[in-house]
Length: 333
Ligand code: NAP
Image (cartoon, rainbow, N blue to C red; front, top):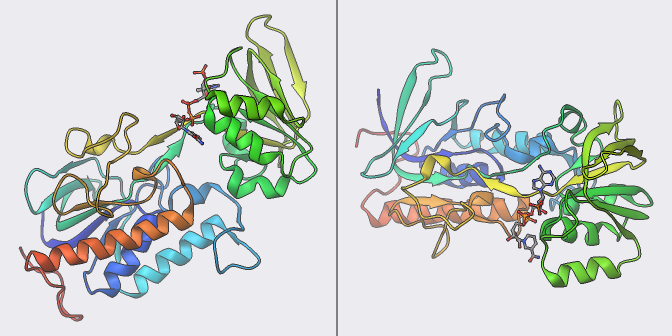
């Protein structure tokens, strides 16, 4: 059941979605954010920063801030200006006509509810592919990381490992040698998938060594990473290596299944945007990692969320849907 048509519906609540919420709330657009489901690895409220500990590169926080704390502040800031939240996971969207409609279980009844809006901002993010080990999930933020730019600094003088054989893995490994004493790249085959130039750079780096034909079978440590159990897939030999960090760099997947067949995507499933945050559907905007596989930073996601809010506000105005008065509630459309 749809009881009202919103000016703006925001799907996803990482730095991009919540920044879009702050800006559109301050523009009196009464955004509704469907923020995701706490139990879900790909759609949790707050996005990927909820899986990190210290964030030291977000401008303005001189001493750093914990990822969940930062996202809590984003959320409260948008709420202060009137953004509303639904803690639920969108199951489907229909973008074929306006108002756009998305459906998600009602958090209190569990029954499917229809949410309709004149403009839609997609900020569903991306998720890192993970190895799928229980110990990997438990130690995430305590030695296990998916972001060298965010966490490399904490491994100054340590021995660490990177798993993966693509450009991401070698880029992370090379970057991490600025801090770590040694970086062991663990790859499940003997040939790297990474581009030649990245390979050459890694091979020339005296701090990088390679463990070929090897998979990680467990992350050792109770409260922080102390080592890895590994297995050679050719000889079946098992061994343990002592490292204090594991960077998982086996690829990312954008959370775009909801929009397949409706929004244009590249060959890896990332949404294609043009002229700022516009998608191929007039009135639908995208921001954050769901449309960015290059930078993947909280600050760039937040910046693109701001762009999506401004673009959608201008789009509503151009379509004769100027923001409602500050005291008005959303109207029927
Ligand atoms: P990718 O190219 O898909 O490489 C993923 C790597 O992880 C592969 O080596 C793969 O092994 C390995 N892998 C996958 N699943 C695994 C598992 N379960 N266990 C162990 N290993 C696993 O991903 P990516 O490196 O993130 O790159 C994605 C795209 O972004 C690529 O097009 C890349 O060129 C681009 N990129 C470019 C740059 C740059 O130009 N600076 C930097 C980063 C990424 P196999 O090789 O055996 O499949």
